[in-house]
Length: 316
Ligand SMILES: Nc1nc2c(c(=O)[nH]1)N[C@H]1C(S)=C(S)[C@@H](COP(=O)(O)O)O[C@H]1N2
Ligand SMILES: [Mo]
Image (cartoon, rainbow, N blue to C red; front, side, top):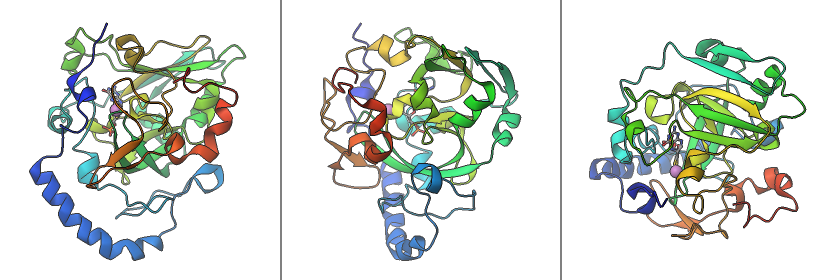
């Protein structure tokens, strides 16, 4: 049961291609020149009051900690998506023909109003917001990404979870024709993830359908994917077709593959290390030196209450 893939083990070896690195070096100079101007843009902040702005054509900006957004090129060319490949720099090319229409999403289980949404009705059924979040992968790299989408809580409110619903289970499309990685017998396909209902209802928990004001590309999880900024990136399941409210904590693809390495909670925590590597620091894509990892990925104020009295070492 020690099914560990190469790319989860070697965070640093799978580095950016030379071409991408050169491009990044070029944009860093521009970034420095425009950083003052960027501050004049009303920033997208954390929390329910400040957490949303109307989507707008975007050049770049900073997160609420002052860190520059990663450029579109990096966000769309350095991806984890095992249904296509475990090589991050090949996901973009291999996923370009992925069909995202027609697409339906069923939302059911322990709810009063189970529904099957057509993707376009779902995306346009809720006000589009932009949220700038840090994404921290358990492998030790991170990015700042301006997402477009809506908070999951709005969708859950529409279907109305019943009193016995405690968790939300998410499932990726199963289609080995299009997703050849699903023929890899090491994993239990389709990709499944889950959240406790109160985590799912938190305003930061987001369903994304875009990046930089543009429609999501296949490599980032088109047509819709989950984003939970205080958790490791693997919780952010891509290409969702099914959402179910359930009573028991669901099993997930990563928990089934390596239960000692990937817990259900997967909260970013610099003091709880992965069995094979430290989580104390991370490499922000585009930067040369590592930086300290923040508790709950810097969203401590917003989410600590969810885990009161919980042993975060046990529930990792
Ligand atoms: N269906 C599916 N979702 C997935 C993955 C995957 O392999 N398949 N990888 C996860 C991991 S490990 C990370 S770090 C993020 C990466 O998101 P990005 O490629 O948009 O940066 O997606 C997550 N969602
Ligand atoms: Mo990841």
